Image 1 (cartoon, one colour):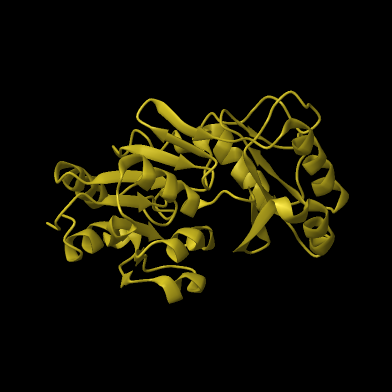
Image 2: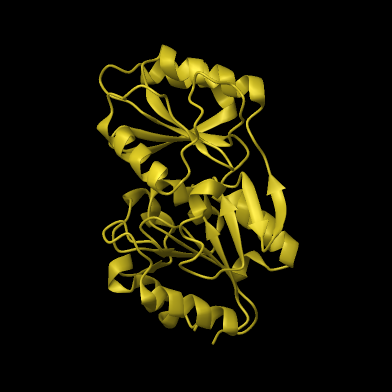
Length: 265
């Protein structure tokens, strides 16, 4: 076991949660449990907003959740931080997405919001089915304006004016290219890195004692920020310059393997 209390931050999809078999490996559950027994703190640090974390909560016990790329932080039953897109700006964003021929999902704390008509993007329709199955699909569509949301994701194809969309969105959003025409849009000033910073400050833990586990481009901010960066076997190459430890795929017990090798358990 390493000396002193560490703070461990895990991405969900492709890191803790297998996108192949849609589950958290037993080895990861046990490794996280042992780390917490050793006195370390464990946090989910995800692009998913709070409602989308719900299906993961019963699968693995952790100390807190950093949701929506740093837009909401929950420790136990306490909300440490929360920020939503201003209401009028949220309405304007829906117009910008439509005007530039993209489609997407608006991700809120309580629910996710889709356009009611069938999308031309099959990936979005598939996502909508998953969100509905998990109970997070709002009865309200983009036609209604009675809700707020924290962040959003869009899909683009050859018909979309992606450059015009980016210009119209302006500097108050970071657009993360997730590949295959999928883009995650986060309010500027929030990221997985800002979430880590708030947690470390809250607990009085040094940056050198933070460990981050990730695999995709929306993990880039925390890889740039942290000193101990564990990269999953299947990963986005953009993270490689910042990785301090390469581990196996999530399905091959990559989380437990890394935690053992790094002396966290």
